[in-house]
Length: 515
Image (tube, rainbow, N blue to C red; front, side):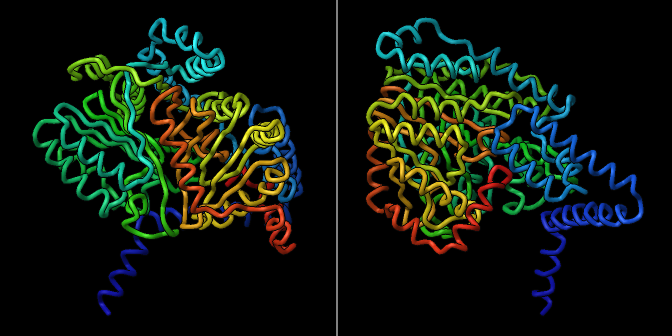
């Protein structure tokens, strides 16, 4: 009985429970006072309506995605007494001047330390002018150069990537940089932590960044202090506080591991047990990653150090961490690699534009895996136009979702895509978390960027665009193998869904950009 009461007490006083209760209380208080005051004060009612009207004008004049605008306008018009106030409080993706000025250092450092090596873009242009256009866009839009002298290993499942990461971490002699959205104690993280403790004790510079919201239910409060006690330097991105504000929208969704500057991992895999199927949450968990060696790892290093300096208020000497310092010899080229970042600091949706460019320029096929198919009108147009033009467009989404309402929004797009000729598959063994595009056996993107509004517009993300690399064939074959165990969704199946279900999907679709 005492143990049971202790567990209940521990649950009640967990930080995440306290934070959630305080947020609910804030929302409830705002709604309560809005309703009560409107009964007694005509000026309050008029002020609320004026605030809602101003919010609608602000939304319409902004540069955000039209679907996001529609979702907020519907919400405000449905609840005019507090909808406008709520939008101005939380809905804008505009950061305050102070926060934006502080975060500007991230973009400035990326620009300063990511100069494009001369000759590579011209070399690509001679092989394929279309590929060079994509390279130039990423270089100018994200300030991330393209590299040669890099090699890549594709990991089609989390278990493989985890094993390879442990092997490479064991070889670290100088520094280890890790940046992840989710950090969780368990079978995946515990042996990795023990390895990192040993490395830190041996004098290796070990640093970790993790997102507070992503990890809030996964690790104890003050976990950064525990890591520091082990000699591991730790940073928390955007600590989650029980105050409703727009900063809650901006999360660090990147997954980066850099070892001695010359070896880097990125992809969709977080450091939690479901990613290696040590724990079953939604059936079999399918995810992907890449391991790069060589010059392209430098962009991952710059991304990490820029975020580290922003959080800690430090000024790192970036030149101490270049790949060439601890890399014995320059590696031969295996195609071209362009790791890039995307962030909410500007109005440039780099991740979405890279995806759109790949779809629009595909000649034969484009294969996509994504956990969420919450697409904009621009993405819908690109996918349907490509399919109608004869391009083989295929998309794999989960069969067992992690969020039922998000999955219903994904399904709400199926019929329009299928009608245009896009083939949709659901991964029947479970949940597919991979975010990958591959086209024409020549181009591919593997990274952290989901096809949803938050990933494309609000989060810090990263991915790697590849051209004529040997692992592109591995990515295509993995897609085909995944498709073989997936169920194809037909137009007949879409039409067979009961009306209430289709109605709920349509309603949820309106508010999809807010999910």
